[in-house]
Image 1 (cartoon, rainbow, N blue to C red):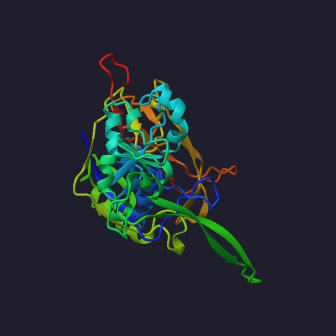
Image 2 (spheres, rainbow, N blue to C red):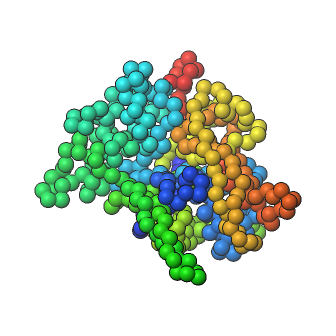
Image 3 (spheres, one colour):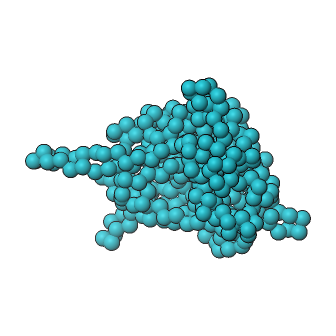
Length: 383
């Protein structure tokens, strides 16, 4: 059993995670594991830490810790990524009738996640098709973006489930209109330095309802290993970087107050079944397969989604510039484990110039897999 240390992030003024290339008007609603790792490494470097010492075990595929992406929580309910393939858990009839609803679900609760890991069919747990029908087993939040069980409602933040005027619980069917987060396009303006002419533009911002935020898990493999000779342990370096990020902020548009957060470490760990060689695992992180894991990791009874990752890098050795684009397997995908693990690698995405000029240092993107195995039936076939 793998025990994950869970960290909760509560944002002060929302955040901006860039999507769709250079367009500032869009923002993601979760923080991918590769972005989280890059932010932690950058923060550690700014403390005077040894970046090479921090990344050496990852380059050797002996990581001292593994990361999930950061997903939403609402009160005491943690949410997980919806799986990419649906036919393992839903009948063909449900897929015909409710495919539109299922495609809209982005996050499911821990209670549903556990049931799906146990191989249960989920048709009866789906929230009602009609909004006016009172849920009995499963219900939706935010118009169907979030899916949870009726038993988990009492763990939601009080402002979400209690009518402030009457002090009574609101009907379960009404929760479908309650939001965990909201996305806005915030107007901004630039001023020409010469003419002082103004030019308006918009930047995306994601903000959370009271009692909501993001959580991520860390599987510590060698927490007391030293980053370098005389350096801190990886656990201490990680916590130091997280404290700096809380003040500096995560994501883009930090100069206008986005991304700042407070964080807490949950007292109880998150237990997950430990994958073995040949298992099919449900990814809770992004994944960049090592060449030895291809093609088997992505060809045998799997369902996955690829996401392009590009953007800008920040370096002390020069101005910001575009980093190399790579493709990662997205959270919620099912992949086959090849070998005993850890699975995946970190990839160097430093820019490559036609002139032959080399960028002065590596730019690492995290791609180690962290997930939970999908169970097999007695016949050896996945359920």
